[in-house]
Image (tube, rainbow, N blue to C red; front, side, top):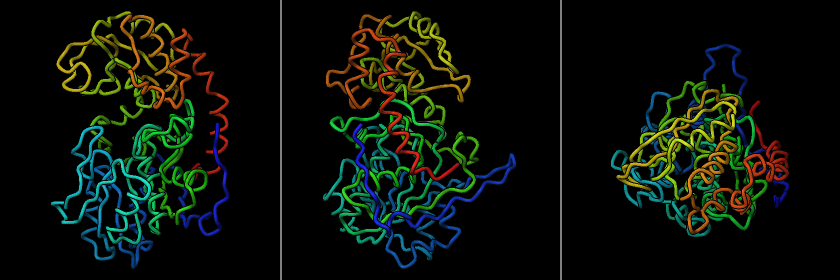
Length: 410
């Protein structure tokens, strides 16, 4: 694995971080997001700054008010612009889309589109907006190919080029921050679903990722500050936070979707449906001609913490729109034992065995999702799931060593 290592400048090494506080040792532990902690200070870190914020529908308070609405109504902060990622600021666009440049009807604030912009063109957007500080507050789901973390990366680099401060407001990793899992991206496979060599399930929060990006991957460090959560621990699932869940994107309706996503999103790289167009995206998988043999085959592997049900469904859009397909539904029985990436590989291996129509997308999108040719070529030559998983362990161990330096919570 090729991980460039750099030492941050002294001014950015500390990252002006507002530290996490110890959570009370009670069952009633309450997680406060970075935004909640920033607001409690009277927005001290934004004092005198013309502020723009990168956010989407997940940027909400505990009482489900959007933070843009809250900040706009508060004269202690000078909010002058909003920047929308994939799916848009208000979340109306499907995968691969955005809302474009417009004025927000609720606040009148100008909304700038960041989707598919990076480098100097994105820096020019920040310059044109007139902001001094760019704030980031979006709920991530813990998988390398979920594009919001690369919006974070691109916006950090653009803020550096534009000479702007960058402030990250932290939120929980909904699938815990216990461990990194899965293959590590090889640099030659870098795309917007993976800019840099991190693991497929990174096991980090966005503030931790920002510190990693700043120290390891950006061309030079941006002036980075972070506001951490209080009351969150690495072993916490999202429901332990007590925070409301807002769908992170149109096909990420629940925390349970996020639980399986790091493995089953790999089916985007195949000719099977990954469940888009159903009420259970990434939990339902299938294609025309698949029958109950698939569920039998994958259940026979005895994967920890999960069982598979023979399922039939009719997607309302995306692959097999309006056609009935057969496949499986994933039922996670023990999320602490469940390994989403190993499960995703096992599903690919068994699907290829039981369905003669199995195929990869012609553009080898699976290589972009997994970060190399290894998964595709190993499965094509008949490797079992354990052999495929074994093939990335050395690179994963190297990433875990680097990752450890940037973790901010116990």
